[in-house]
Image (cartoon, rainbow, N blue to C red):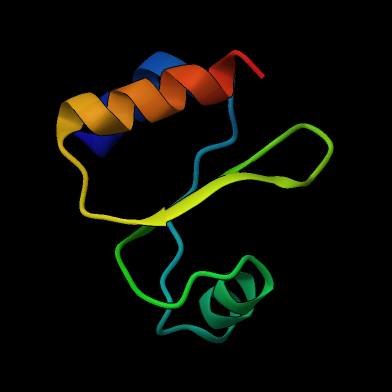
Length: 72
């Protein structure tokens, strides 16, 4: 599902997967208030957190969040 969303929206958004078990992933998670995984964060063009929540998400929910983010 993620690969399909990246293929559809990747030209409009930077979409990444963060591994909280890596030092970089832990640092990102702490910086953006993600305490558990799976989590989902939308960062607006100004670098501010627009949306942050725990998952998991259905494909429909994730698609809706990504569409909202693409409209920012």
